Image 1 (cartoon, rainbow over the protein chains, first blue to last red):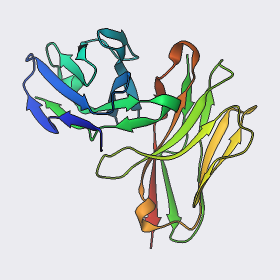
Image 2 (cartoon, rainbow over the protein chains, first blue to last red; image 1 turned 135 degrees about the vertical axis):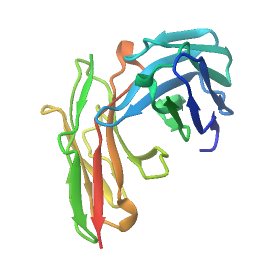
Image 3 (cartoon, rainbow over the protein chains, first blue to last red; image 1 turned 180 degrees about the vertical axis):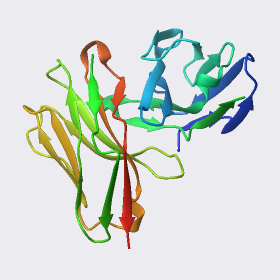
Image 4 (cartoon, rainbow over the protein chains, first blue to last red; image 1 turned 60 degrees about the vertical axis):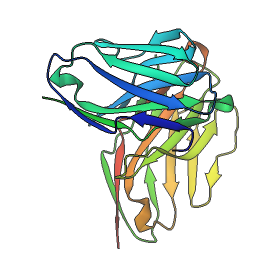
Amino acid sequence: DAGITQSPRHKVTETGTPVTLRCHQTENHRYMYWYRQDPGHGLRLIHYSYGVKDTDKGEVSDGYSVSRSKTEDFLLTLESATSSQTSVYFCAISGTGLRYTFGSGTRLTVV
Amino acid sequence: AQTVTQSQPEMSVQEAETVTLSCTYDTSESDYYLFWYKQPPSRQMILVIRQEAYKQQNATENRFSVNFQKAAKSFSLKISDSQLGDAAMYFCALNAGGTSYGKLTFGQGTILTVHP
């Protein structure tokens, strides 16, 4: 979607390897989020950021870390990927009035 | 903590007919926002409709409308004159404000099939 891009779109990785997903926005929004989508669970919040270097945990944060060194970039890192982290990952941003924009998602497969 | 429940994993409708998707939620906040998102096979999350809890009037967007029952904590989506392009996964979501400001809580989703 315009204003937010995620990379990569697809990734296959091996158990135990580190993985970093990138979210980039051009809207200068303060809030950024990482969600994972799994069947039967909808989307669940992993981590979010409310400013540069300001981040906090969401509902399912174990095994994940994030960093935000610039307003436009929010990185999600799986320190040591496990099969339970096979999922579709979405980045989102929100501006005034809680108007959300979602990225196109990253399908991550851990084998 | 906030919760959102969609009790219909799958729904189907005939083209041109009307269908209603159910959603219930729970929050202790008095000011909050509710959303319906559509996710087609492309995976893109598309905002269908948005409701602010302090507004009594139900939101409408063309063929999409909601029945917002605040006391019952219910937020159903009605799709009128269904079209083949409406086939998708639909998610109900809540932003409860307060310490949860900005964070969305999603329901499990409802897969909508539209039959020609």
